[in-house]
Image (tube, rainbow, N blue to C red; front, side, top):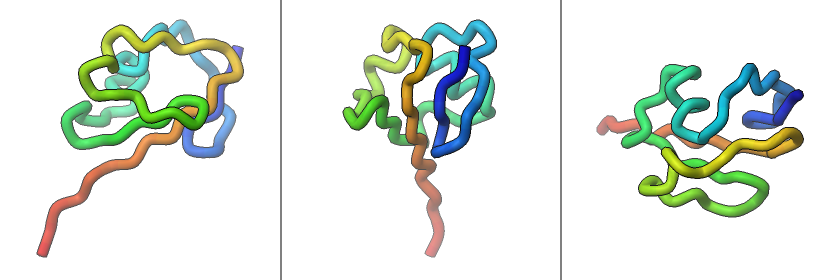
Length: 66
C-alpha cells in the first residue's frame, strides 16, 4: 500500500492519519500546511483525517526568518 507524499511514492506503513504521517516524518503539526488529494486539510482535523491507499499528500513547511 503506497501513497504519494510531495510527489514521491511512499509506503503507508500502517499510518492511519495525517497527524501520524507528520509525526513519522518529524514535522511539527503547528508549522505545516497539508493538502490531501487537492484539498486543504484543516490543522484541527490532522488527528482525524484518515489516510488511504493512493492518496496524494502535499506538505508545506513554514520557515521563519528575516
